[in-house]
Length: 273
Image 1 (cartoon, rainbow, N blue to C red):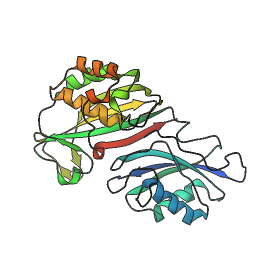
Image 2 (image 1 turned 90 degrees about the vertical axis):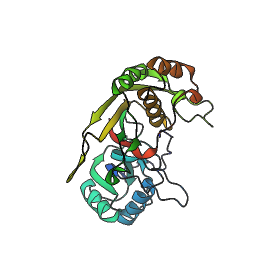
Image 3 (image 1 turned 135 degrees about the vertical axis):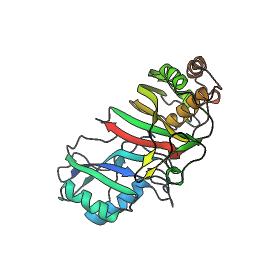
């Protein structure tokens, strides 16, 4: 999610305008954020729309590279263009030219030194797990279904072991990452039950509950959130203890942690600058 993205535009050139956009998307049918050959991606769709609107060949820089099936309510990106259209007009034009599962919720003209990834101080991801007899049809693309009891108090106790600055190589994909810095700082990590309702649908709370993992950090490694959520779910199921989580963290060995949970339950909610 935090792979480097090259800046291919001369930011210091005064003939270019730097625009920041906030993006909401349902990631179900996309192969993630980043451009991939012969694959439909969020970045690819927005860049095509921007070229149509401005006439410029634009490189869109995202705050985070979400994976296939992952959603966002607060993804941030920026781009340089020679177009003199103000940000509000660009946002309206983008929404008129983008598929309905990608929306631009805000746009601003920003200084040349603003960079959506490198200027970010922290990011907030939320992972949603539905505990119930079945996953409702209207929620299937946004939650991971768990059909056994889970202990939220135990998971929160274990989560405390992960807060702070640590090497998180036990919880991310490390293949091909020789020499990479795996240290990140988790600012907050909280698991809580939430109401399940989508107007006008109401789900019986006796049979259907959502447990949300909210994790804010100064940066994230590839599939780090999904590895942490999978490990804490093992705590909630009683398979491991909070002491085991501390030992897994210290071991720096991905083989000891829980599985990566599916991407569909994950959402990038906010980027703080």
